[in-house]
Length: 162
Image 1: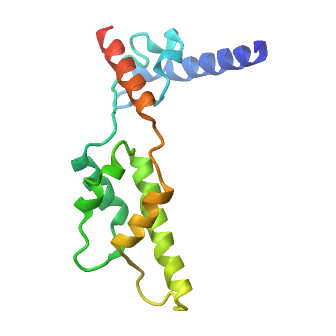
Image 2: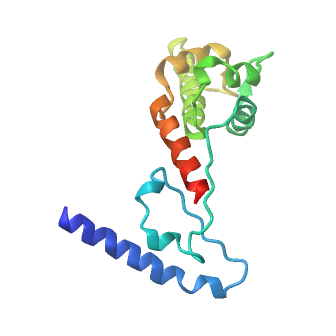
């Protein structure tokens, strides 16, 4: 435990040293992300360092539509495919952007696997269907539990008070 604390202290000190010259520069923004705001060294949160905190929650169904569109761009979808059906599907509730990316990757893998099983070569464009997403939903689950989501929202509420 002692060595771990020493390592953390070194990293914090190095980061503070590296960022100390940034305020004098124009148009330079330093952005960091964490899922454990409560564990950040208070020295990092002083004015002029990481002094602005922004909680980014899980995407809404409308947000999931945009994320899905981004990840499905350039992919061939079956005729009549409705991205909104996936985004508003209860199985997609509590999915992060990364979870949605995994879901799309899994659905595409399912489409490839289906072609292989049917003895077809991957010639031309691969067509991704709703059934591939249905299969993907059996494999891909939200990476954040309901308990973790509530914890993060509580942390955000507490941090916004300070």
